[in-house]
Image (cartoon, rainbow, N blue to C red; front, side, top):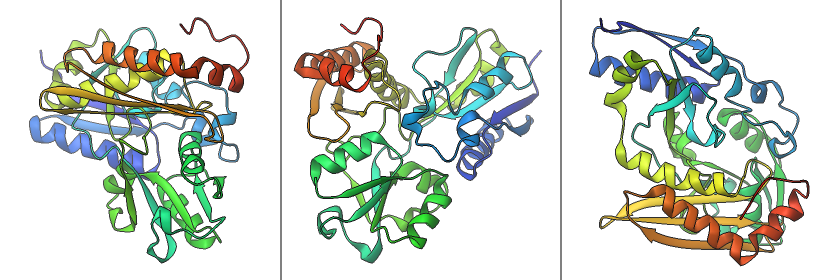
Length: 315
């Protein structure tokens, strides 16, 4: 007997709801008779708004509570921003589908329509990411980079109401909210590397729920899974999270998988990069190679300086 109803769990932010409604629409297009209910679930990351993400040593900040609802059966499907997922999925859960990815790049939103290179000396730039901070300071050490929290509309409002010159944010969130007109400059993701999995969504289910797996199978995009998997492997091998500046960007061109990866200290003084090319059939292997190359360049020392406590085997 086929399943005819689906309960989707997601965060309550405007972006999360927009993403989830897009998934709902795609499901209803593929399966017109399906009944879909959306339930919002407040996560730890939604509750702590006055602390930088890098200072909250808690894995699954934006996913743990949603995954708990999956595990207890109160929802059937979770829609996550792929970059929010910890690299280890809880036992009993699996990523059933990764839909077509939108632009993975970061973008600059500035007052007076100034590009990154046109910003005045000591310009105040807002960002919520150590990865972005490190790359901004590596590009221009004179910038005054300060932390910002909040959802996309909140960050835009804070920029508009402050004396800041610019904001760096993911293109995907703006696109999904129809706010791409605010973009001043798209930052080339092969040069200014995004978060691992940025722009992709992950549809998570219980591993033994074959009926839901069949329902969401139509939304799977193989290329998006390949590129996101390569990037996610880099993050996993470096044991990275919000506390370490790590970025990756993968794409397929001429039947080859390209992977750019980055590891940096917090101030962008020692910024390591690598570009690896391999088979699209082996994204994990390419991610492993990229991570190994970063570690061999001095990445172990960077990680140990940022997080000196034992972190398992980084080889």
